[in-house]
Length: 215
Length: 288
Image 1 (cartoon, helix red, strand yellow):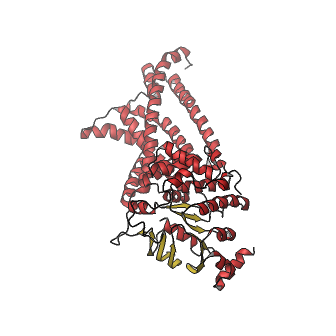
Image 2 (image 1 turned 30 degrees about the horizontal axis):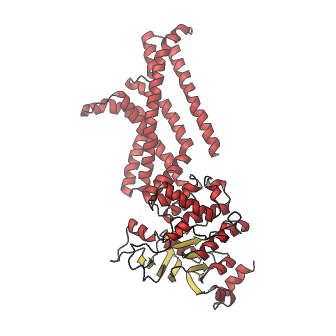
Image 3 (image 1 turned 90 degrees about the horizontal axis):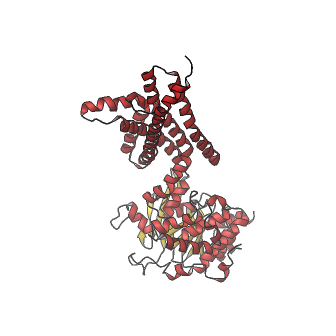
């Protein structure tokens, strides 16, 4: 089997469709993961013992069960209860929620590093609990958590490949499809790997920038 | 001396706009504010850290406008007094009143809710040993958080008044800087401005120069001297700077092991104290 450049040119547009889906799903589920993770971390901190146990249960559930199991469950089992959702929203939601669980741990870790004295200052300035979170604690949590969060976004980006199992035309899915249509796998999977790697680079650059800033 | 704020020696230290707007008068909504005798009042307050007693049956009153300094050995409970007044800690027994209103219990003796407590303690401001400025906000943003969020001022209004207070502490040119770009002394002057911009009637100063080099401590104390001499704000001060305590205070209370062992005007405490323990403490701090 030899490398066929004509085949490469033929399948490249379809793979680029897959890139578009991959980017879209990464952005949408990152938004859920970053926002949801922050909300979960704050909820766990401010809620009662019962509320904390509830949040912890969900966190452990989504961190403990493999993503593929969650995806198949929502895609194949929920319809049996009359809940039928298209594959793309399911993919976005499941990845978003799983990574929200990871991100909330990062946020919680960064919350612990915020000195208690800053909370004293908020009390002394008579800021309400809401304003304290909104103006002081949440911004500091986000700032301190940024490098670790970006790592998770990177992980999420790579994990979008798993959505091909639901037939979502992410880059991996498209590579799989064109491979089977033509019974040639060398070029599609090689290209997919190279494109994934290439798309990592801006993230890695951003990450090194952030780490420099925080070092 | 203040290195940049010569105006503090010529003009009034409290910005004119702030002084004109009934700055240090009790809020109109507070009941019987005219007859209130004490700005802050501790009644039989005890506090303990586990089994270790921090304060024992403390009785302490501060008149409106009075400047009271707490001195005494480390661990004698001075800082706890300030933290209790700001509700950063709760006493194990006793009551604390701000302008006649308890910050712990309502009329029926039930514990106050968070918002009731916040309303009453709003008349207090506090400056901390480690400044506690918000590191992610600029100096100006640090100063306008409370006025916009708590006093519901517009951003423009809050910034204008913040700049006046920055001018007062001699740091108007640092409005756009971040705390990490300033010296410790400058950060503490900003923290003082931040506490004053919400116009407290009681100012709690907790070892505000303990984290500073002596030459930086001087510029901070100059600012406080100015505020003390030119405003009607009550002050409750914890400090190890005896010269400053002597200059600025109307009254000194000497703490030892959670109790006030002696109190009186600074001249008396420093020149001929009654208590042997006061004499021993002053000897140890003045001779080093």
